[in-house]
Length: 140
Image 1 (cartoon, helix red, strand yellow):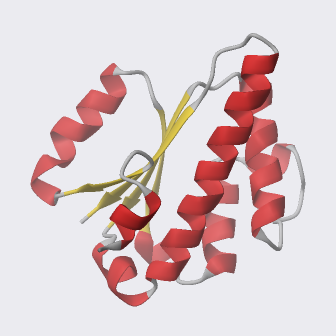
Image 2: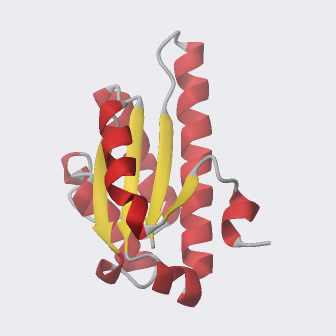
């Protein structure tokens, strides 16, 4: 069993390099808001949190980078709720070394995203608003 099977392919998707163009076209056609991060931009929890913080422009909500997963999740929650976003795609390019060297980092990040998606969806259903889909695309 690999990491994707453990966390569920509905949030994390492995995309082979030869299918990148058609995948990006599909998420564009489906009107996903996308954030792209080169895997070389992070190698541990703090650098991944910083990369997400920067790419999602979360400084609007907090002028300092959060130190943990809970702080990041709270900021992403605020971003989603304030923007009314319904579809996010987090694209991590050149993901093979990360899957090989620090799979637990990606696993933990995916868990955070699964919980975030579930919590935003529950809140929005309660308020009779649109739910959210968040996916992580790992480009190999």
